[in-house]
Amino acid sequence: MSSMLIRNAHAYVRRGHFEEALLIEDGIIRAVGSEAALREEAPADVKVWDAQGKTIVPGFIDSHQHLLNTGVMLSDVRLQNAKSIADVKRITREYIEERKPAPGTVLHGMGWNQDYFTDEPRMLTRDDLDAITTEYPLVFERACGHMLTANSAALARAGVDESIVAPEGGSIERDANGRLNGIFTENARTPLLMLFRNRTADEDVALIRTAMRHAAECGVTSVHTCDVRGGTWETVIEAYNRVMADHPLVRVWHQSSFQSSMEDYKRFLAAGHVMGSGNAFHRFGPLKLFVDGSLGARTAFMRRPYHDDPSTVGIPTMTPEEISEFVNVAADHNCGVVTHAIGDGAIERILDAYDATLSGENPLRHGVIHIQITDRPLLERFTKNDILALVQPIFLHYDTKIVEDRVGKDLAATSYAFGTLKKLGVHMSFGTDSPIEDMNPIDNLYCAVNRRRLDGTPEGGFHPEECVDIYDAVDAYTIEGAYASFEEKVKGRLLPGYYADLVVLSKNIFEMDPLKLRETKVDATMMNGEFVFERQGA
Image (tube, rainbow, N blue to C red; front, side, top):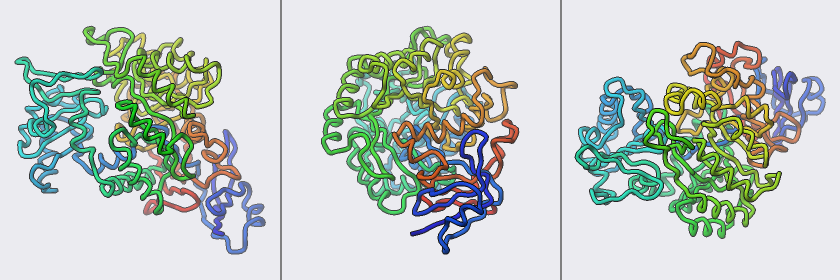
């Protein structure tokens, strides 16, 4: 039996209640309380770890992200910091010069955002990417992940020519002369995405490990991740099985996406990957659906036309009939459903589908992910059948710059309504949608409690009435994340019988000025009773 006594701590138990010591045995918290009391319970050979008075919280649970894609982002062309089209070109050329990929290798990049471009605030086009290289196929995904741009070499490799027709739930853009300009959205992206998604299990193993190291550095001990998808699921699961069998750094709960193929989903279920199957480190969770796109790309599905582009209401990526079929098949196999829905039209559509199968209770814990554009009646609908809300406060960092333009001031005022969701008693958990945003929980907490962008603007916060306090924010990142995976009795709290998953912070986030939260660092991360990260110099 391995045991550890953490002493001299400021360990968060519940609002206003902290303890000075934790006794851990074989990866489980056995007792919390005073150091003197726990020393009496501890075995003679207990290892003692001095927390130096630092604040300890339960391990952060990211309730929606893409762990494998985070590894991809950390390994491929990184465009998050590109402030211009010229930057995109420079970064890519430097990547090619440094890596020297084999001729014809498909190069994938993530994170560009035209709203940050200072030279020309427009979408990247095929011609921009052709100016970088015609030797390498380039596929560059916008920051939202719902739009991409490909160069001519990538179009040729994917077999895409001028005769292509956009599928239902997607768009393919053309220039003024009717020529493909390389921009593809939503369901139309598939042929380009498959150029780099068909990886080997060995490649996926390396990417998952890279992402797990980053998660540990961030204090994230559990992820609800959307990596298992139709077409590649067997290879991805093989990779995860190998990682999880060899000292994993993070617990994994899969949100699996199969809306492109019902037959593939049924094969997945027949293989035994139903919700709750697996072990304490690696479990299969709900079906993941996407019913619209993103606000930044104007593909989020709205009930009314966009305020800054009345020609569109966005793109619904599934019909009501398709949604209902998947929800029903999942329910027949005792599986829940969580659904990406950003626009109010998309949120309404998925709530309609859930309500058709529920009557006041939500035993499978169906949820909605993102929930960005809402009015009060739409929010109140979450209480009818206890639908979960899996939200990303970090989205305020970018979206507060565009939301009033996209949907108008009145609707913007009732959107990203985390305070209202909390007051309504909705089970609301926090995530980052990494790699769409960085996995850093501190920045996410900052946005939740301050309603400001990471540079501190706007003064006073964006509709500060929707702030949540630091206690509720931490609980949303821990207790509620555990609830979303049916683990609220074993994870997300520093109590006896719970997993010894915890984070040591450099500052007392519960008592400091909320505007200074970003000064906080993760000093150490423990998962299953073992430190998986310790910051040098902490």
